[in-house]
Length: 67
Image 1 (cartoon, one colour):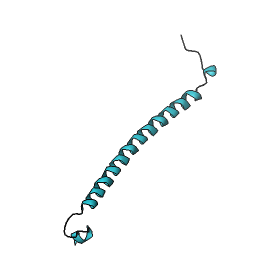
Image 2 (image 1 turned 120 degrees about the vertical axis):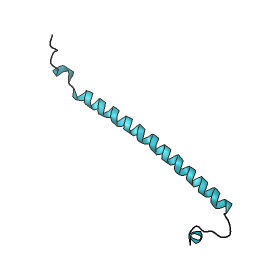
Image 3 (image 1 turned 60 degrees about the horizontal axis):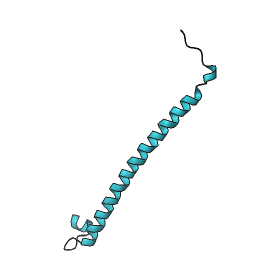
């Protein structure tokens, strides 16, 4: 039954194996690109949050420091 599900017909087809390797490599490439993009997005989100926090502070209205 498993042989029928995998398309086994008397031996492994080299074209099928090559295509499977190519697709596996493509999936790995896409996963690594996704990880890189997520990390870049996290860094940009943190930077935007930090800038938003700095913009919310009004230096002209700040109270003087106690001495």
